[in-house]
Length: 347
Image 1 (cartoon, rainbow, N blue to C red):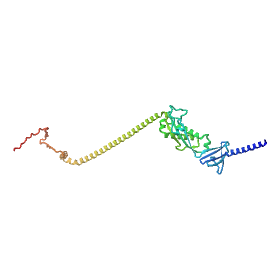
Image 2: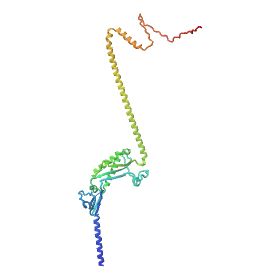
Image 3: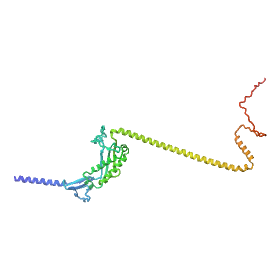
């Protein structure tokens, strides 16, 4: 009996030694090249045993290799991706659809109404409904602060993105949100930055960090939205046509105005030059007129008659009568034709 008990105690001791060694060796862990990690001992940052590597004073393990820390539950190794760029995607404003349906490019048929228990949506400034999906990329500034300050830091970033989506949607009408998606995206990104700064999240939001994956009207009223967009496009087209017509009319009016002004100015210059030439001619002939007025008049009359009668084939001259009385000119209108006799040649 005693030998059996001694044998049992030896077996138990061996098992306990094996368990202790297994417990201790379970603290070994390997850090891969694409990983970083922090070691927490009773919830506080601690340094593990390193093999051939110097300890990192920041507490964030960045060099790949073998490390030894106290096993759980004494210590906890929290692994973090080496690339500090993190991504979260929001579907809080999107209707219910499964991953398999999205992968197949198929969506469930829209019901008669939205189901608030399943379908996400956002409220616009004009109290309409739209659906939005967005993705946020951010860079972690301090891995230890980032991972230890929040129970689930990624959820905090996801909540900030959701808040920004509802915030941006409330500042646009439904039609504006659908047609001005670039402005909606910028508003979401600005709101995320404000929340990150207000809550002192240890992350950086780069420019164009928010991607607006999808933004659309509710499927139940898609036809009405399409009709409204068509009407808006027709309105824009009509306005543009009217503006172009206005520009064309104003250009033509300005051209006609310029032509009239230029023509008037040219005519004024011509009249002025003509008047100046006539005045110069009159002044040049004034001495001759003052010296012999009658001779001057006759000469001028003769010159004028010569110019007037130059192209005429028939001319009549009626000199003044000796008694000073005017002569009478009588023209025979419709005279009878002269009679002609036939002359016969005598043989």
